[in-house]
Length: 266
Image (cartoon, rainbow, N blue to C red; front, side, top):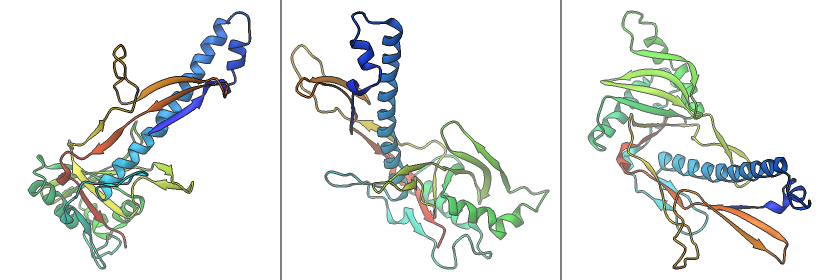
């Protein structure tokens, strides 16, 4: 990923270099302006990484603009469509059954440890779960609490906690992620598929790995390393001073078999 901006187009640039003496206050404001613009571009790249993570969780395939998509070859058994008559909107269906099957997959195939799992729910999947007759009936057993579904609780990174439910021998924490990005057509799109539920371990083994970005090397200049690399250069012909930020990262599900994705809505 590479994003850039022309610092000569910033409002304070002419005030900074147009005077015979640099004003300290103007210089400080200019530096802050440059930093804000750089962070805006970094956030744009981070949203692209966030989309990569969502794609890994949904089907294990990271889609790229240039070159071949990266397929982590998730097992077919980890990608489940409940099918007609088994979707959570049906009053005769108990969601705990399919959730338990997902947890069993993580334990048996993914070798996940522990009895607590997290489940990420698309907007429609969450609505159908909370409205499901079997789930609501479980909540009426006052002296035998199977579930602890709570009002939405927002955390600092954008997810929303909705409590816990039991599924067989497991406790499953319910999470929504009401965050959106603009797709190539400029349409606001949720990161999580509205129809799907994704189960992962309490402490998943996933990582965001970074490679080096292309750069000119010389004996006296060591290569720049890090998640995000800043550069500055001049285009005297265009009378521009360009700053860019580059990053070469990829979402990697190290333990790829510890993801279980269900389509729970028709």
